[in-house]
Length: 260
Image (tube, rainbow, N blue to C red; front, top):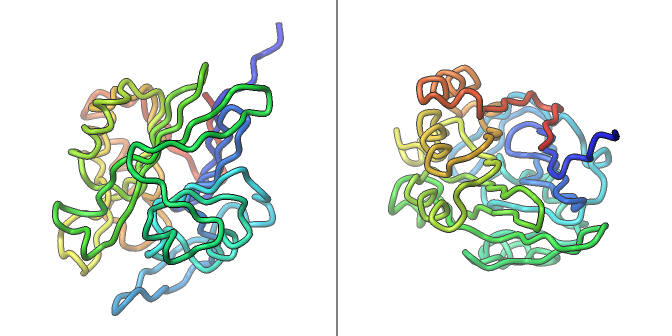
């Protein structure tokens, strides 16, 4: 008997970037293609320590780009902006639509965009809440968004974007739990902008988010390749083990894939 084709595949490209195939719809998350180096942002510098697993030419055209936000170079760098300029459609925040224009469409919370699947049926991409830091930080860090993917006969997939708020995760869980797969931006990002406050989920919060979502599997993204992350793969393994969720965790090296 032939093995059925996977309905969802994730390939990590490093940092926040991932190439997804969801029911035959190809999706690129947060394109970052620049080499290692120092990247200014306001009066600060973010340091990238490794390049992407694939370049834009190797990724090729996709059906849609999901961009959590455009204002930080670790989520959309120069190479990513060049890619976005040629994309068919980019779903992001309304702020990104105003700043970038072109094919960028702001997707408000709980609003969905429909895509036709190659073999029939549709896929829905829905914007969901995210907060890139502690409560009250949005005027400083800017607007960000997450996404949920749904479709008949397909797993429910949550893509957190640069969200640090478990309260936002609880809002999403109220509508979508149990989630089959959660792509959680982790790493416990910190910069001088907000002192010791986390700008993304730390490892313990990522494990708690997995429990809140009742996630069948978790694929962490955006926990390496930048110097402002405070926790990496080992911290994620330890936190998920402490929460009794080691069997849910799928840690990928850049370039590696996992399928569902």
